[in-house]
Image (cartoon, rainbow, N blue to C red; front, side, top):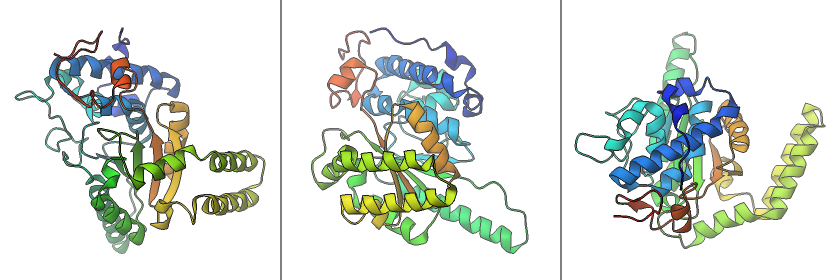
Length: 324
């Protein structure tokens, strides 16, 4: 297969450059990042499928959030290669997992854009919550001293559906809900952590993503909201929340834990992702869980056809996908 032109990446050494681009150019950036990643991993080997699945999400996150002041914590780190390409490490991306080269995971000593070192699953929400609590304590201390508040930083955890099957993730969510801390959790639901997941969590996410009645009601409420005054729109939103609770049985599990649930959202459609991420960023309420649905291996035929085989790869031929 022919890879996309990567010329557009030459002027995007850091996310502040990315944020200067119009939204209409971001899909070109995503296509270039995907091509750059495929070519690099074909040379070094590494984790391929996870990163390909979050390319658009990564571009959108760095365009919407003011990183590194806003912090993005990637769970495990398998999906962090696009993040590395966009955060000043493109020139070293072909040293991934090589001696003296880039780490295959996020690494604090490697970049200020990596606020948390990972490699084990299910730790991201705990880490981001700790950062959020620290931020809140610093704000309270500044207020007590009569100091002017600075810009409020966003703490974002990106966690996959596989990692959400571990108890540590739910312990962190329970704490976040109890603290009412302003925290953003992005659930990257590709329905395949390494191999297809089995169990209640997978079925629950599938039910949310495929609920036609729920989606229809939600879309109707949105369309009505465009026509109503603010006060009536707020009542419509409350009615929509009530309708959702009837459909999925007492509200979503995440909302029962104190999170405001948003989604599902197509994780490969920037026209959908960008406005939702902006709304989440600008919301004063918290914590929020944004459910993003992605496809593992997106944009590379062999990885799409056999996502489990292309989770982690050795060197491979880009055209055929055949691994060495």
